[in-house]
Length: 287
Image (cartoon, rainbow, N blue to C red; front, side, top):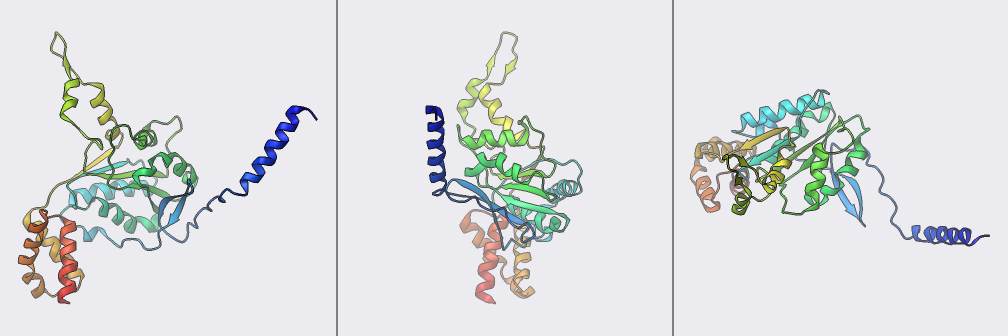
């Protein structure tokens, strides 16, 4: 036996011993058991974890965002029907229903084959692996990235750009990415970025490369949906909706208006999230 053959034999023996200490690969989930999944890591290995109890939000639960609901519902309907549809970026004021709207989509279209996979920002680098796992499945998958934003130099930023529109392979027909963020361009924008703008002798304006890089990610989302702070009457309507869902009487709902406004004032926000939190507190104390 030559020295090379001896070396290969010893290497194979060593690898066999090492495999005994490695964790076994995680099995694929039973797709019949759930409509929502999370991407998780264990010992450096990613896998899809079943979400047993999903949020039961519906489109009717989301008040005073009718234009946004119509845009998201139409895009998702096209997707589950096998028609062209866009990746979606939902941006704007906090607590106004961005994440809830995506969860409501799952309730609306799950029976038509829609599935939701939640991916944390820290796991953006795994997007190619996730897409490879589900690309041949018959279901339609939305990869849901909540509260997404990046700082300069984060690895997940590049991975998301490639997953959206930058890989040599064609995009999977059964996968879309829906992301929410309080930043419209997903990256911090600083006053120093303006220093990269220069004027030539003819007065033309040339955007600096730094600004172009920051804008390029958000532009890869085909559909932008913006959310805005609620007016006082809108906020009170949302409070009334949730109090009704907690079985409060019309008299209790009317009496709660003052408390609801004080609750919002203490938190400095009249958002849907604040309205829901107040309704839970009020209903818990009075019912």
